Image (cartoon, rainbow, N blue to C red; front, side, top):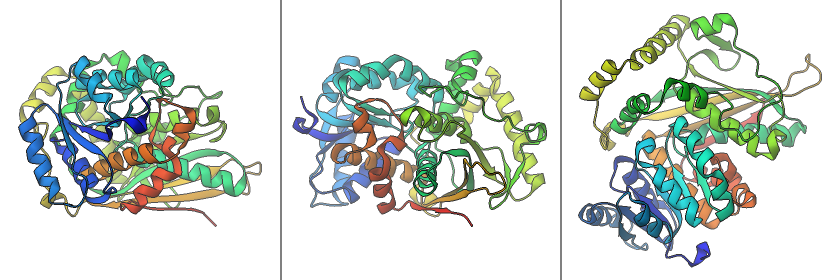
Length: 415
């Protein structure tokens, strides 16, 4: 069945969860009124309550259908057959997401999620990429705060350099420049359970920078200087003093997968590599962040520590209230170095993204606008024809929709 002949353009699975509600509210408030969609989950009663809530946001729009489904293969296959795009907000994905991806890949249904679980994404690529290519399913994991902004930022900078100078890109230095936010219970629980699920060898293998790329670079990326490895500190002109970033482990492998998907790495260039940091006030603060992150990682490796944290952590499904998160924000900045023959004449591009509001609202916007992009636009992902892809494979149509929804962006060559 062609996607245009399916009952819905989009179904939100896990709609009554913390992130799922943000997705539904954005669809109801901002997507076209003729967008055909449905909410799905285990409890019909909770879904009806949600539909009543979102109806007040825009009574004139087409109201969502209600679909009940357990996380069982046959029910998910029937659910997937009803829609062009399925958004899953049911995590942790390494526990509950595999059967959803399998159902979508099998039925040729496009799929989106907001995981940051790279080991699970690594497994899904190896298990379902070929199936999704055969059925034409566009499967895009990590399409929320992790890792849509970073992936789109790098793609924008690389594209600007290619269009302006006609050359590839060497290093992209990306920073979480400024941020005010608190994690949800689901995010914290996911981090803890990853170490219970995967062996250290699998975490190390899947966490390598190029682990998700369909092709490998012909040469190794430059290694970090010894002093930077020891302190986590780096100073970059126009970005300031930088330190370790929590987002790097999730974002870098996805960006590098985009590198490999875009003409086998030729569009980005053979010397492309991404480094990811957080801006810090000064060297002392940056050193402290590095030590805390290093010691925290070592502590989480110990099962008793994880058990204690799970006893006191915010439970999945909970998180900052809208009132608590109304003044949240995040800003990313990046510098991209063009490949140039003359080292004495360096060329650089500057990129900036900023969002005012909850990080989970941003994730909801990313998922909803990506579903709209897949359902109604033509993108590089459509041209490829399916497979395990990345947010940047939705290209300019997706970025334009996000900009309209409140993601402020800027890309320009530097003097």
